[in-house]
Length: 206
Image 1 (cartoon, helix red, strand yellow):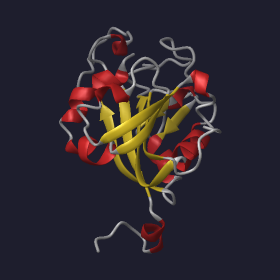
Image 2 (cartoon, rainbow, N blue to C red; image 1 turned 90 degrees about the horizontal axis):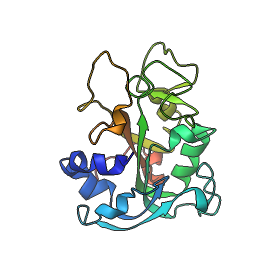
Image 3 (cartoon, helix red, strand yellow; image 1 turned 180 degrees about the horizontal axis):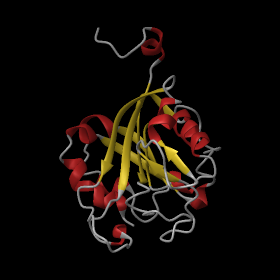
Image 4 (cartoon, rainbow, N blue to C red; image 1 turned 30 degrees about the vertical axis):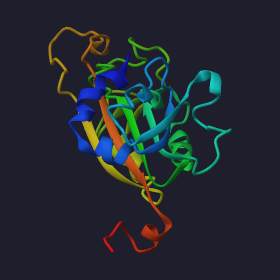
């Protein structure tokens, strides 16, 4: 819980969040009581960020949100609750403006579920995630490298990071995200292609 707050200090030490990712007007999908907008002072180029939660509608489809509405889309620990994560990612990119950034955090299956699915720590998790493994113990595992590659014609993947700095590799199994520091997650950032960038095969200078 409070994953956006846990991420704050880490993100403040990466200048890209303040100067590239959290820039303009955004939407925070599945933010609950911990919206990224509460840290607008730390990201001064953030002009506003709308929270989107259960009362707003289906986070998978964002049916009431027009295409190209936001400069950035943020979602922390929501994608694992979606019935169809690829469909959700497609719509999250749909509402993003060309050149905008999608910032997503999902639980890492080995650090969070820790070899057991359905999840013993959150019964609403419909999927588990791994950055990339040849084989997973989970019957509902999604390989992020494969998933993100399917969107290469819409967005460039800029960053995929396993957030294990505070993870304790010990024998005792427990939910480490219940601690103030445990992230137990994977964070990825994508940038939506502009039409002219797609036409010339990349984001090139000039």
